[in-house]
Every structure is written in structure tokens, then in C-alpha cells.
Image (cartoon, rainbow, N blue to C red):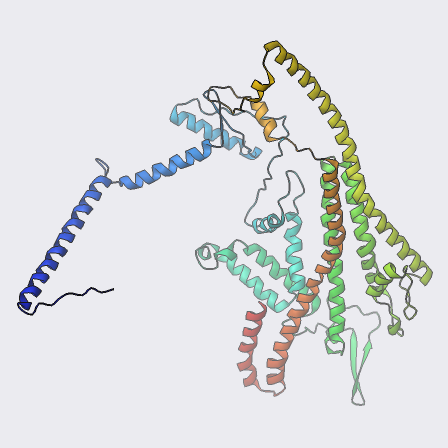
Length: 546
């Protein structure tokens, strides 16, 4: 908001001159005050006989004090002694001893005294020795959960499985080579790129290289080079008879690797590729889930948890293999069966699995059995289903009941100890003539400065284990069982994204190629159009698919 001023009718020039002089004097005064403040602040900021900044020294002092008190707050104080517990990898013990020796010599002090405590029940933290290659894979594992101390580290397997499954989704020789070159550039110029906008990708450069390699390998298996199949020979002969093409299969011919390029000329190419990729995705999924469950077996055997091995690992792996392992067996058997002349009688894998649950495994009348004859296939289906059903109560009941028996023995021992302590305490109360009211009025106290510390008691407090009642254990086991049973189905289904994303990748690349290169260039036999359209095709595939 502005202010209103009365303009004098007389001596206007004098008033203007007066105000101008006041403004000038005020500005000069402000400059003088700023100069004096600058001199004052400069004076108090200088250290005597030095050009250093006192304010910076104060900042360093505050940061140092804060760091010291943060460390001291982690310790427990006793009789002129500070005690703390810490973990140190065995490989760093020598480095620690050298560092402490250097501090003692430099400060001329006795230094900290360090003792190694062996007998305790505190669970150590997990420590992995990583390098630039294994770091991104370990970060992916830690996102879902850090393995406990001395448990199997799944990141070692993830170094291969993660880029391979990415290659299954991204299977394309051309795009895989482009991704491989991106990883190579990140590896060659990593020091320069660490300060650029793509610094986040530098840490995963080796993983990107492996993703590109597996993408090229799976692209070779799919025979897909940016929607163009490579003609490396064929086991089929294409003959033209009376304006029609007839395809004949060469006897005893085996295509060296991947999909025969003649399949891309058939009318059911999409159906064939869909079936192939979908079934391979399920096989890879069951294989990887089996590997994950096997890690549990290694952990159970190493830590001596025999009940967990026999009544969690074995029922879980049996449940997985009896359902989806059986389905994988049917897939392989169907692949290896010659259906020539009876293609319409080929059974559907999904229909067999549904029949196993709803129709006691009886095959459909219009389909041929996969396993020998109808009776034996039905018998095998019933046995597999019964085995799967038996595994559920084994996972659910045995471990909680075992823990209940074990806890019952421990509780009886614990109650005997408590009763013994209670009797001794009552005798001490009577001897000292202390009333119960006075004992209840005493407030609990913490460690005092002049009170000696019991380090063993501190370790026992840190490593104390919780005691759970049987109902809590049973509910926890119930949740674990339901999660595994439902997760077996949902996780197997989720591996179908390997097929879905691979299908999306190949179909998008095929659309770009068909509409640009094939539709507007090759059909018109125009080199100029190909020359103009190829950058557009490359841009679409790179920015949309890459």
C-alpha cells in the first residue's frame, strides 16, 4: 500500500532539495554502518596470529562434539568406565589393532581395552564383502530382505538368474546388443560418468552388460533380430505347387539352436510362439522357486533345525513339485510326443490340471492321454493330488506342536528357578524386616556413574529371546502355511510375465517394422524410402522398447 503526502503549494523546489539531501545522507549512513559491521565481523572472525576463520573453526568444533556425543550415547557408563558392544568382521581385526596402536602412540594414552566375547546369544548382523560387480545384485536382494547371519546368500544365484530372466523378457539380438553397448560405455567411461546425469546407472554397469548378453542369447533362441528372423538354414523345404506353397520337413533334421525361421512364414506363428514362451516361463518359474526352497534346506541343516527341514522344507518342495512340477512334466511329455495326424486329439495342459482337481484326473473323452493310457494317467493324477494335500497339515501342525513340547519343558525349568528365587527373596525380606509396602515404593534405578558394570548382564539383556505362547506360534505357522500355498500358485502365475513382456516386445517391434520398413519401403522397392524410414524405425524401437 502507498502513502499519501501533502504537496506544498509554495517553495516546492526547496522541499525537493531538502528531501534529496536527506536521502543522500541516509544512504551514506547506511554505507558507513555496513562498513563498520563488516570490519567488526571480520575482526571477531579472525584467529589471533592466523588468517583462518574462527566461524569455520566453531563449525568444526560443533560437528566434532556432536559426533562424540552421538558415539558416547551408545555406551553405558560405569565406575569411571564407558562400555559398549560392537561387531567387527574377522578380516578387520588386524586393521583395528593397528589403528588403536597408532592412537595410543599419538595421544600417549592407555587407549581402549577390547575383549572378545564368545559365549553369548546375540544374533550377529549380516556382513557381505561386496565389490562393484556384486553390489547391485546384493542391493536387489536387500530390497526384499537381508539374509540372517550365516544363512545362504541368494544374491550369488541372482547374479545369473536376474539378467537371464530379464533376457527371457527382452529377448532380441538387436536390442540386446544395443543394451550391451550401453553397459560397455558405462564400464569404459565410468569415472567421467559418475559426475553426470547418468551417475545412477554407473553402479549397475556390469549388471547392464550381463543383461545385454543374455538378451542377445535369448534373442538367438527366439530367432528375433528387431522383428527380423535370421535365416541360418532350415529343416523345412518350401516348394511352390500350382500357385500354392507346400512345406515338407527334412528327415532327421535338427535345427542347431532356437526357432526355425520357416515358422515365421506360417499362419499360426503367433500361436506357436505364445505357447512356446508361456510354457518356458512356467518351467523357469518352477525351477527358480525350487532353488529358493532348497536354500531353506541348506539353512535348516546348517543351523541344526531338523524339524524345520523334515516338516517345512520337504513338504514345501513336495507340494511344489506335485502340482507345478507335475505340470512341467506334462509340458515336456507333450513336446516330445509326435502328434502328426492327430493334432486335434492333443490334450491341453490346463484342462488336465483342472480335471485333476474337479474330475479326479479323468481325461476328457475327446483328448488322448499324455501318460500311457487313461487309467494310469488318472491314477497318477489322484496320487499327486493326495500327496499335495498331505503336505499341508505337515507344514501346519508338526512344528507348532514340537515347539509347544519344547516350551513346556523350558517353562517347567523356568518356574522351578523362579520359585527357588522367590523363596530366597522372602527369607531375605524377613531377615531384614522390610515391609512389602516399602519395597513396592522403591523406584527402579538405572546404572549410576559410580556403579560397576556387569558386562555379562548387559550381553544377556541385549540377546534376550522372547517367549511366545502356543497360540501365537500356531497363528504364525498358519499364516506361513497359507502364504506358501497361495504363493505357490500366485508366484507361478506371476512368472507368466516373462511370456507377456516378451510377447509385447516382439509384437511392438514387429508392428514398427511392418508399418515402416516393410509396408512403406520394401513393398515399394524404394531405396530412398528405406533410407528415410530407417531412422524413424530405429528411433521408435529405441525410445519405445529400450
